[in-house]
Length: 542
Image (cartoon, rainbow, N blue to C red; front, side, top):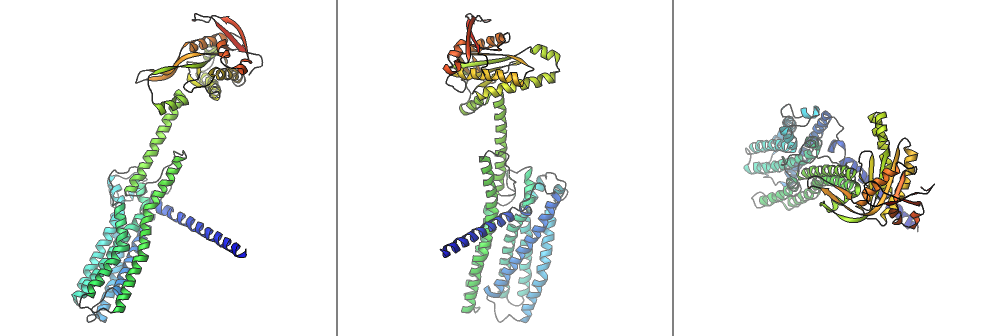
């Protein structure tokens, strides 16, 4: 039991350590110095980028110097007859002078090239403006500029050391030149990968306003090719050189061969893993940000947007994601406006099934509500007050109709027409309409007492569909129940109940709803050939 508790405790500690390590890694790779943020002033972004790029160049040259040292000491068999104190001192002296000088020159050269442009490469950052095409291209090619500077300086080092050692031995000069060339290759590739990471905040600002359709910098394939060069190709070339030297007259002992192979294998395994990890981070990190942003969109958060900080194909993918989300936001905005204009049910049906002119017969219920005395209201109150009062009135109408599964077809002036049973089919639409009418009458009396309104409800068969032309149409309902409900509303404004329904609507509503209504006399409504038996709510019914 004690062993089990200890094992559980150890497991919790390991899990906590993994969590802390993961949190620390996430904090590191999302640090503003590496990915940037929109709140940091542009001048500060440029200053940070220069500092991190300088550190990247120093680190790359340190790696290259280490490669040269390993090759020179262990991996490069040397002609013993020409190696003496003078040769060693001259090579060490040249290295001691050239390496810091080349580092300073490379940093200055790269910084000046990165600062080129119409007004200087940092002017658009300091001025907080979008870069022009040339400035944007220069920002995207920043890592390539750094790599070119390092390649030129290490190429010059190859020439200098070959010229120095050729005086003693062409074989020595060839070996030293190849060794420095491998160090230069390592430095240039490492400088590209590290500066690509350090210049991300600048690239993010350069791509914030516009993403060019064509890439101005090497892509993901080139990035991984450089990683392969650093982690695999250089050690293999070293082994190849050892094999070539072993076939030459230069003596190489078994112990030297073992040490050389072990050193090169260690470089391939350890350094190769680190370089591949860096390349993987540069590739996977923006993809991870994209995946998290996609998850936000899946949850309905259409404000999700990611910074475009990658100059490769992944940057184009990031920009495409932002364009896609912007399109979704625009579509949702149009859908929302469309839904507000024609009703959510009509909008949803149109988006799902498309729009075709024509209609279909359905059993429907129609509810009309119309303000009484609107002419006097408009004459006695300022237009702003009239509009505000009508909006409070219509807000209650829309809310009640929606609660009872109805749909507002239109707002003709100071009236509203609600439909129950289209486009969403309902069982006993008359029951929904009558309940909505009773609740609406009570709500209007309580919440909008400064307006008087009549309400009419009718039910029957009507045609519901899209009416108009291919260029301009609307979804509406046409039929006798519409006319009957409108005339009942006119009559209701003249009666104390302020709510009238046809007896046919009450009969189609069901027994429970019918108990709330009083069936009255027949009335010949204006414009109708047949009389309508009317009904009104019982006292206290709501």
